[in-house]
Image 1 (cartoon, one colour):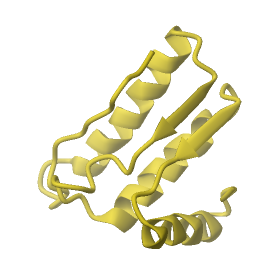
Image 2 (cartoon, helix red, strand yellow; image 1 turned 30 degrees about the vertical axis):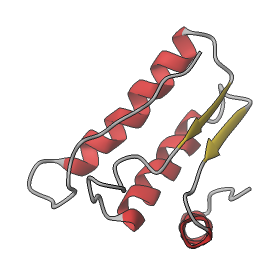
Image 3 (cartoon, helix red, strand yellow; image 1 turned 180 degrees about the vertical axis):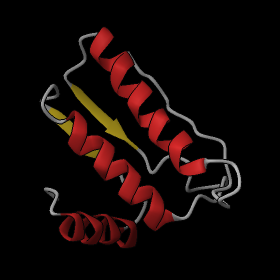
Image 4 (tube, one colour; image 1 turned 90 degrees about the horizontal axis):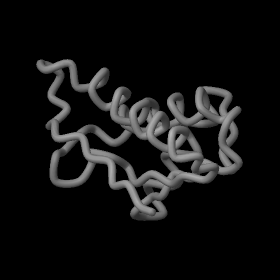
Length: 100
C-alpha cells in the first residue's frame, strides 16, 4: 500500500505554509497509524516545483518525524541529493535529533 503526500505551497510566508506543511506530515502519520503501518518514508515534501525553502522544510519534517517516532519502527527521510541529505543531517544535529 502506498500513500503519496503532497503540500502545494510556494513557502513564501504569506499563507501559513509552515503550519500547512507540518499538518501534511501529521496527517500522513495519522493515516499510517490507522492502517497499522509501522515503517514510513517521506520525500522532501513541497521543496521541488512548489519551491518551499529546503532548510525550513527540513526543520518541519524532522521535528514532525521526531514527534511520531514512538509508534513507528522506521521513519525515513528520502533526500534527492547528497547536498539535501547533508542539510538534513546538519538540521538534525542543530536540533539534537537523531540523524541516522
